[in-house]
Length: 66
Image (tube, rainbow, N blue to C red; front, side, top):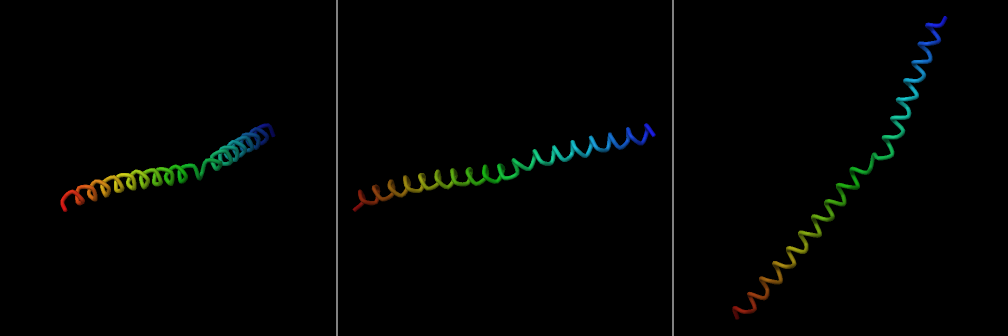
């Protein structure tokens, strides 16, 4: 009888640990996606700044030619 009680107790503790781990890891599920989106926005902003600077430089140099 003690063996059965010990086995059930161990099983219950194991299931509780799995449930607790599952519930705590789901709270950060979307953080990786948000991080990727923020990096993409940052890269797009940097590219836009570089394109604007190059366009301004080329326009000013083209104005000097004529």
